[in-house]
Amino acid sequence: MKTYQTIWKLLMVGLIVVACENHDYPKHLYFDRNGGTQTIYGNDCVYGLSIQDWQGVGKSSVSIVLTDSIRVDYDWLSARAVGVGDITAINKNAITITAAPNTTNKKRRLIVRGMVDNSFAETIVTQDK
Image 1 (cartoon, helix red, strand yellow):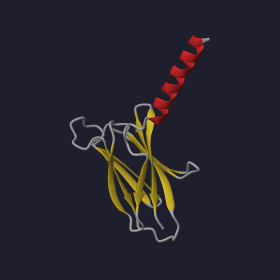
Image 2 (tube, helix red, strand yellow):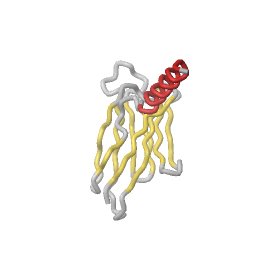
Image 3 (cartoon, one colour):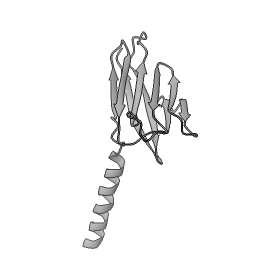
Image 4 (spheres, helix red, strand yellow):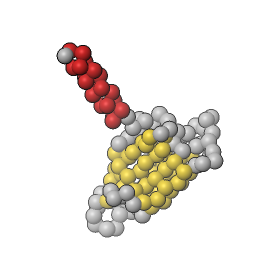
């Protein structure tokens, strides 16, 4: 019985560690209503970017051939990763996110996903009204 409990605990700890991993990119990013540009950093370089709403609607860009940058624009947000194919690039683990000014009088949210290895680094971007 103790063997099953030990195995169960190890499995649960493993699931928690995997679920919490975001390749060290922040899980949330905030902009005021004026918009602007912010750069986020993680442990690993992304080779694909997407911006989506909560229903999964959006746009994506993937670097199939290793280029120096990838960019995607959707609605009021744009995201750009630089140094995708260059392991010597200074900002190779950076994603620059730009939000347009919010004139809707509503809080806005979109999800930026960066493809890293076989998983995603996901950041929820919120802009004040």
